[in-house]
Image (tube, rainbow, N blue to C red; front, side, top):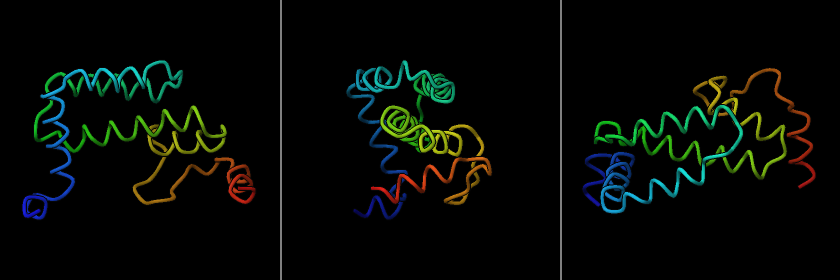
Length: 122
């Protein structure tokens, strides 16, 4: 517990992921297989970058590696299981470079009506 306070929980998670990858290198292959074939250029571009990161992951890049894993997996799930307006807004803001650094910053031409309609009907 003191380790996470000293280094920060994000860093500890990153180091844990690096340790898991070194012990079970096939785990990265399983994740890559899960992400391949999405058909979305943003996910495919991110996957290509992730593969580069995995060639020689180091402690300094551990947080970015974990962030890439998380965003790509989320994007893949959004593309497969969410209605198109919801997935498109998420992908544009997280992987497409069209979002800001604050929560809720989306491009102005997002189909907000479809997103709100979905949330109200749930």
